[in-house]
Amino acid sequence: MDFFSSMRVSATGLDAQMKRMNTISSNIANAETTRGADGGPYRRRDAIMAANTDRESFDEILGDKLDEEVQGVLVTEIREDTAPPRMVYNPSHPDADENGYVAMPNVNTVHEMANMISAQRSYEANVTAMGAAKAMAQKSLEIGR
Image 1 (tube, helix red, strand yellow):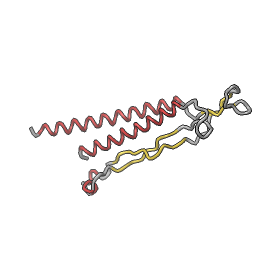
Image 2: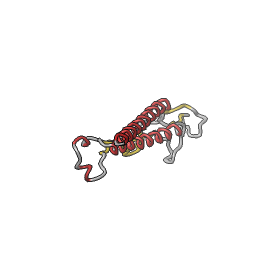
Image 3: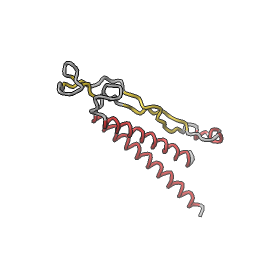
Image 4: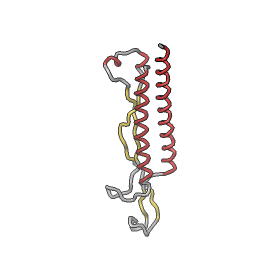
C-alpha cells in the first residue's frame, strides 16, 4: 500500500467516525424529546457503515496485487432504530396518554456514551495512522539527502 492510499483510508475512517459522533450527539440531545416532527417520540439513529474500495484512478485499479484488498469505510445511511419507545408513568406530562403513560425516546444514554467513547477511540486511531504514514513519508524523503 502506498502513502496516498494509507492517507485516503485513514481519511475515510475520520469522516465516518465524525458522522457517527454527530449521530450519537443527536441521540443524546434528544433523549427526552417526546414529540418530534411525526408527532411521536424521537427515534434513536445509527450510522450504518460499509467497506469502500480505495481506488481513484484507472492506473490504481490495474495496480499491483498488494493493494487489491485495501478498503476504506463509508457511511451508507443513517437508520432509525425500530425498538419501541420506553413507556414512563407520568400523568402530569402534556404528552401522557389516557392511562398516564408517556412514550419516551428509545435512547439509553449509557449505551450512547459507550458508543461515543468507541467512536472517539476509532477517530484517534485514524489520526495516529495518518501521523505514522506522514512520518514514514518524511523519513523516506530524508534518505535521499
